Length: 308
Length: 289
Image (cartoon, rainbow over all chains, first blue to last red; front, side, top):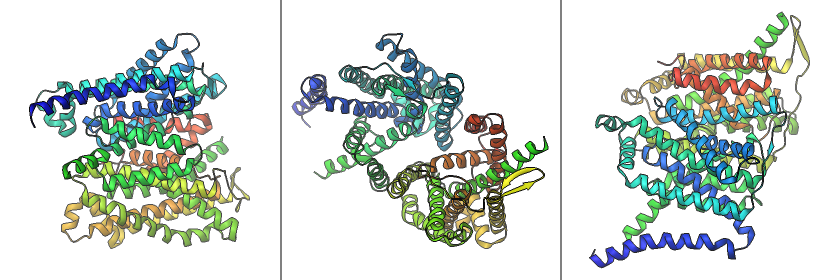
């Protein structure tokens, strides 16, 4: 490769995302309102998947606690949305999820592999049932009303969080920090022996990814206006990011982004008319991808590139 | 006092018996086959709907359905293993990689089975009454079908335990659970054993599903809750310990009934508390080595 193409490639890799971002920023001005609403859901899935991949991608610890962090954000907004301005509540929601993730991280230090997977799932279900029990017993009603935010404002909040998530994912990946995380994923004992503080590193990354999930939950709550524990802590919020990320391919960060975008759009098109067929299709694609495309869509694209 | 005690104890045994069966099924699939089958509950749901359909459409007694459907469930499980999981296993680089990818495949199965059921039967709650005359044991009142379900759950667990300890295939299963590589060296056809284990797991699920349809209301979304209970019991008894799952099932059933007596809203909370405590304090389970 000569110098000129290398340089143009560098501009392209910087220019394309910027152009894309600009398009997204002006989109609500000219696309129909219905699409803006759809974009909110699509952004939600993309952020959840990307932030899931920040921790689980390099470390290969499959977390099923996304619903817990998301739900905490939803409830934080439901409880504080009336009293405080939205941006502060969104930041606080992220902060609460961050603290919860630190706590879970410290608890799960000893668990590996399948134990970690089922533990994270167990803790989200525990929180869901605790909230459900608390609400029926002490609050008297199961659900809560949330102060509404209009869809365009929600769009820009989500876009902002999306950009921050992508930037953090990028910064973490290209830093020493990210390299150390990758080391944990490849051989945790070796990482420990060369002096990486494995537990602190894992816990902090876990908490950072939880921050974005909580913030997203807070924004989505204002769009739903009515929430209850089953909506806020729906286990699908834990499964979807994993499946979307694996469908896209966990390696480079645009893999999860691609997977989430495709599935979120598919869901927007299919779910209102054929919800069961959508989930059925989802299951079939998932199995097909695991069996025949172990590296996801990204793996397929790379294979194609090599052949060319 | 005695009545309350009997209520809780026998109620606990009934729930526990079903939990034990379900957990043994999952334990076979995970402990031996390394497939943490989250679609386990969907097989239970299909079993429940099979029992319900056969009874309401053709008037076939669920007890007859147990005999007719069990072999079919075994074959379905066996077929799923030799098509999906055998291929996946042959292609996985390590055991850990297989555990992760087979977990995801079973999520796919969950979505497929559950949504076919939702398309076929809609999301309605269904049920039928069968042998629901009440029986009085020392002043505590139970409906007959619950006692029959308890009997069959215990009989099935007992029969399976004997099969595991006394038959040739049972020994091959235990050997493969302990050390698949050595078992293979000693002449165990590992692929066949893994297929049989998965088939037996599906059989247990279908069998308990039919029992569940006799005593509870059923709906296509019911599966996941049973899967979670099975995972909790298996963790409690120790991943891979089949006896542990049997005993763990009864323990969890009893605890569930005690907690329900205190506050019905807390029973699932209690299950997850136990689950998390076990994982934190003793990840290998009470009976794990």
